[in-house]
Each structure stands twice: as C-alpha cells, then as structure tokens.
Image 1 (cartoon, one colour):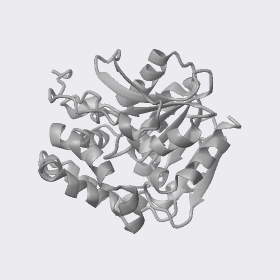
Image 2 (cartoon, one colour):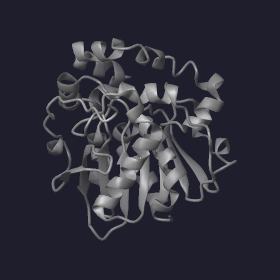
Image 3 (cartoon, helix red, strand yellow):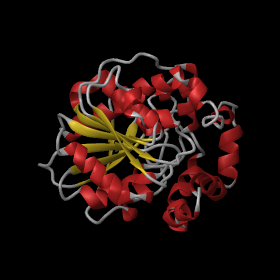
Image 4 (cartoon, one colour):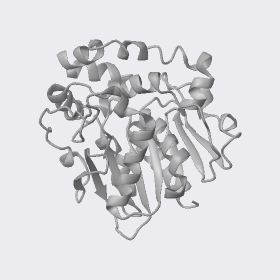
Length: 301
C-alpha cells in the first residue's frame, strides 16, 4: 500500500532547456522508485548535486550548469513527486529522511563518493536533512533561499506569517485542483513576483513546469503534509562548510534563516552571501552572483 505510485505517463523531459551536452539519467533506486536527474561537466572534476524547491524542477539550475560545468561535475535531480521522477501517492512517502536517502542513492548510482550539496526552497530542507544523516558523503552545503526545518519549527513565531500559505496545502484536494485547473495561472502566481521575475520566468519556462502539472497534478504538496505530520527537530553537529545564499527581499523565508548566528550552535563553519534587491528565486534572477558564491565555497571545501 505504501508503495503505490501515481500512474500518469511521464511528461517529456526538459533536456532542451539545459546547456548543450547535458545528459539525462533515469534509474530505479533501492526505494523502488524511478528517479530522473541531469548531468553536465567533467567526470573527473569535483561533483555537486543540486536539489530544487517547490514548485520547480531540476531545470531550475540550468544557469548553474551553464556557468560552472567547466570546473565541476554537476547533477540536478527531479526529486520524487516532480518532473520525470516517480510520485508516490501517500504523503508519508515524502518525509525528509526518505527524500534525503534518494540523494545518497543518486550518488551511489553515479559512483560518486562525496559531493558538494546545494538546495533551494524545500530543497534546502531536504539537503539539511541529508547532511544530518549522511554527512560523510558531502564536501560542503549551500543553502539558497531555503529553510532548515528544525530551526524553522523552533522559531515558528518568526516564520508564521511568511508560511501562512502552507495551510491551504494541508486541505485534501484543494491545492492540487487549484493548480491543475489552470497550471499557467498557478505558476505565474508563484514566480512573477516582480517585472524582473516575469522576464526570468518567460512563457517557455512556465510551460516546462505547467506540462507536468497538467499531466500529473501536484503530488509535491505531499512534502508539506509530511513536514506537518512528521516534523524533524533534532540537530546534529555539522562539520562541513556551509554557505547561505539569499536574496535580500525574500517574502517566504524569514530573514533570521540567512543569518550565520542562527546556525552557530551546531555548524562549525557558516557564512552568508546576501544579494541586495533580489527575491526568492535567486539562482535564476542573479545566476552570476550565485555561481560565484558557489565556486567560492567549493574551492575551499
């Protein structure tokens, strides 16, 4: 019963939106789920694994592939429930621990012992969890406009207003039906935060996301349900370098989460890069600055 997977056909992949030379992989993992991810870069270079947020896909990292693949081996995953990866039906299949295990499984399949790890939005929550349980597999951690869930729960009074939208996701069928009825409208509501974001999330980009919602609905709301019913509170010491990369005017992630002092009780080496005037989707809005911040972290880790 817990292995039930949504049976909708897999939509076409986003390979055409990645830089030339990008390779797509699809493999069945030890969980029994088939996952899709993309790869570009020199096989002998240090590896980095990118984890997207809601409601995005692996293709949200295309600017990082374009700017960093000459120096690194880059992988970007469609996490379970998104894009070309399988979507388990039950929300308890989307706990942070299970999705974090998927990241390690991808590294195992690719024969990568250790990798730099990058997460945005809900992807940031996933990579924090991965480092908590599988720290020896990672060289560094970069958080791009995203939460560490145990800290967010402990500081709920600071985050409550910014996360008020989550309550709608907990109502059965409501959010899925709203998104599937008009995927383009839903995505414009998410992405078109200002005129610059309208340029970044052009119609062809919106359509790359919309085709998946049109075909499969929005199983990714299960991440939020799993977080509500199975919250994670424990924080183990983090010994690898951590860099926080945040847009200054993010409306959805509290400012306390971009401050290094928030993490000093359990992270040995943490710093912050704040991009003035930038919003939530900084990897697309300010790719050069984000790439420089990532390279600066990776070159010393």
